[in-house]
Image (cartoon, rainbow, N blue to C red; front, side, top):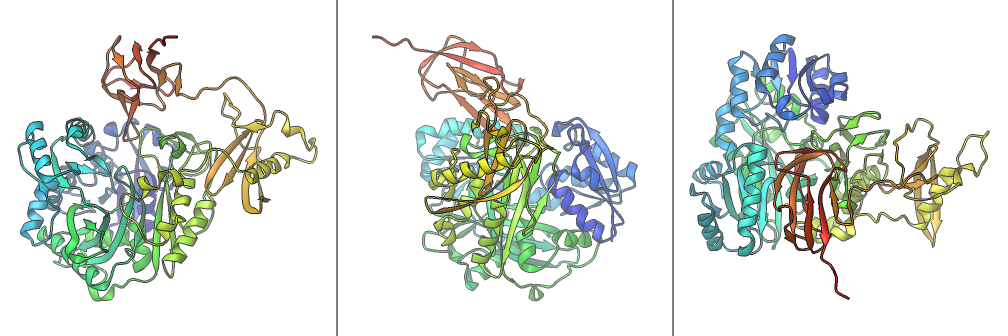
Amino acid sequence: MIASLLIANRGEIACRVMRTARRLGVRTIAVYSDADAKALHVRMADEAVHIGASPARESYLCGDRIIEAAKESGAEGIHPGYGFLAENADFAQAVIDAGLIWVGPKPDSIRAMGLKDAAKKLMAEAGVPVTPGYLGEDQSPKHLKKEADAIGYPVLIKAVAGGGGKGMRKVDVGADFEDALESCKREASSSFGNDIVLLEKWIESPRHIEVQVFGDSHGNVVHLFERDCSLQRRHQKVIEEAPAPCMDAETREAVCGAAVRAAQAVSYEGAGTIEFIADASEGLRGDRIWFMEMNTRLQVEHPVTEEITGQDLVEWQLRVASGEPLPKTQDELAITGHAIEARLYAEEPAKGFLPSVGKLDHFDLGDEGRIETGVEEGDAISSFYDPMIAKLIGRGADRDEAIGELASMLDNVEVWPVRTNAGFLFNAVLHPEFGAADIDTGFIERNLDALVPDPEPEEAIWRGAAAVALAVDEDEEPLAGLAGFRLNAPVQDRVSLSRRSEVRWVSTADGEFAAVSGFRDEERVVAFYEGQAYEFGLTVRGTGASHGVHDGELEAPMPGKVTAVEVSHGEKVAKGQRLLTLEAMKMEHALTAPFDGTVAELNAKAGAQVTEGQLLVRVEAEPTSD
């Protein structure tokens, strides 16, 4: 077994790897950027090494510095986690060349599966069914448009080096193809340094089915069954579960067998995932499931596989990297129960899922189920990295029981002042279609209005918040906190919430039951209900700032980088026209004209870093005639 391990990552996956390493008696070394100097993964490790500035390209993406840190700390091996350098074959080779153990697949396997077009050709040769599309070398917009027309719309544009939902665009009609292609290539170049794309036929009623595979250096390859990752937003996974609902034994054998053949085709070692797209218009069928890509790393959603198989996949990784054979043979692996994972993000669903950053002054995820996180109360969510706060995993003897536990976990989420998608996730797992397993990758978009929580509280929540406001110290006036009590009163300064008075209030209004929890401080009451946070101001101070549109003024909704400016000063624009694109927390956000008018002020240029609330564009409305 590896004696000491450097984890070349951050956040919840770094903490996750450390827990298993510690159980196995392996010494752990963390690496950290300026922004992560006091992060949980740094505090958990036996040793920590600073590797650079806050931007990932100056720290977590600096392979040479990470290898240097491993040598300085005496680490025997490097675990890459997922994201960052996890699927970088050159980094994997550099680790090996430095005399260190690489906890991952061989560099040649990463290269073979790293580019989606080459991987699909290889899979077709291995007898693995692949999605119809275009994998050619001619990348001219004219030729790609011609191929898309021939495939038939809708089509999916995919960056060959893409991952994590980035570098992907669905195109419904030919007239939108060129704009989508340009946006896709720009995002792919920024995220992966490679703007080459492929085209795929868009599958109607698609379900995203993936299979966990594992190989060792002794020629053994097994699968640990499938996961369903169909609930996605903008091609990013939101809720994952195992096993896949409505998967019969024959279809499971077909898809898992294809996954094993795929791994064998590249002599795979370590943890990997074979991703398939299924046409579920007539249910899951083995002849309607096609290979999409392989992820040559541990997946974010690996806990659901662990829960149904009883295996620790990180332990498997460490044992395989140490030269041991796989801990189990295929006939020793079986499915027990059901597990569902929800990704808790720092974002505001009611505001178009804009990322939310800041300090976690109040942070309580309860004690039910399995929770994977890399933060604690008092830590900060930074704009430099992915906005995922935690993964909540509900488990049960069957799917209904797992849904029930996960819904209860989401109901108990209390996070403030950073906003989360917990209320959105709560609504998703309790949606009738989800309960009936009537799901596909369009589920969220189709039901978006029903899933996004109403920012205005119900009467029962008002009553619960009032009860929190009255839960004051005995030496205070019972009604003192109600002066100026109103919803969403703007507050200019964020204050410490250490003097909070926490209660759980059960209220009924119009015959409906509501269990509201919350806290209060000198200026506000925050109530939590079904994962959603509601703020009630106790005082009115200042006018506040919404970082939105004020008389045509468009402000940056968060810190980020301007990647494209598509208008010029004095240009006439139409309502809804894209003015510029902002990249923040690994996502692109478009700022559009609020009405017909003229660009009167332009304070942004491509490549510039901007701060939250910074005025970027001002549009003057077209004069109206009486």
